[in-house]
Image 1 (cartoon, one colour):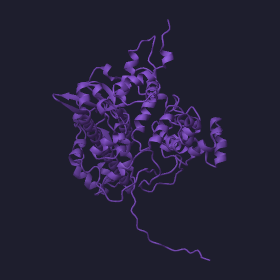
Image 2: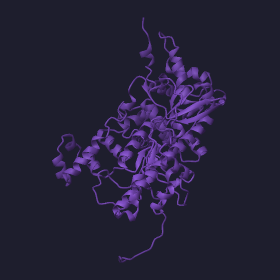
Image 3: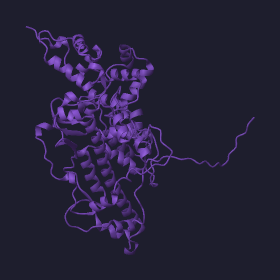
Image 4: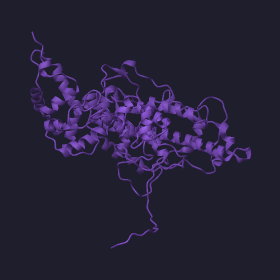
Length: 519
């Protein structure tokens, strides 16, 4: 019989750490221009050493600040870790200074990637930036970036874009996920059974039976759909919808999570004192958790169901410049940042500042510099992605929608030299102004079907062909899905009736019976 024993053992291991600076970098990358503006304004409010660039005021030289920071530098992050941030986030460590004990209202203190992390050291993603001149620019009170200068803006009418439907939005994300053909088909079936709120309207076994999907494929498909944005989509009930949103914020296991999972009825009836008693938590913890829940969205898909045109502001311009197209970032109304020099003296021991004050000011300066770097890195990444889109979609930019080519996020990522998730974040919720109108950047990414002469036809163009046929049909004898399929196949397009029906429904075009005009 073996006996148990205790002992000390040394273990050497390498571990990748997701730093706060890298977390912010990922967040900044996926923000559109208006969201970035809000974030910058909030940082200006929260960080006293950050301010908008304005004429006048004292400057801090980079050399002085570097000396006062006593050699401290902004936390470095590795490109491998950044590029590994693909899909929904699962638990991972975040490197932080020890903080005072506090209640974990949102769940785990760590967030993680679902991709394999490389163990080899890699370079700092900011090393490519000439930060010396960058620092000088932002210390100059009169500095304004070239992109902030006046841009010849198109007329307001060009900002009216086609509304993006929830199925379109989900399928554009689904196209970049690694799934088997069977699981992808099952995911399409689930998306086809979502209501305007983004909730599944039929039992999964019924959806599986209608599409002849196996339980394993349905499970993989459900997991994939529930990983998409907006968070909470693909839920089967309110509880699951709210839990999915908390999970997307790394809130598993926290007080808010426990309330939704186990005590939703008490929350609905506003029995907060009973909640505190049952959960054995102070009332203030319950109050904060309830506030977190209050900011969740029980109907996440609703914002994609609004009808009519909506006004959008482009994040990037594809401007015709002679025989070329120039990429111009839209930085209009973005605050131009600089460092406030008034706190410089607080970093000097000789001025009598306490260690706590010096540490606080040093932390604020470090945080400010990190934010500036992240904003610059966001700009460079989006520009590189758009330059690649320009090369790939040159015919579209020159001649219009009929010349749009199939293009996958993975292909762009390989050409730019980043992970597909980086490209996905760079184009998320962002719009581009082109000579042919304003389009969501994700519009350029589309799967394809086999077209005439063995070529590839983007699914977006397939939709346009279907719509054009229906627009030109005899209203007294409208085309059936089978007839549309036959016409497309006669053009050499490899398509099935089921595909035609699916895209007709996505475009909210009624069935043949509903379109028929009776005398």
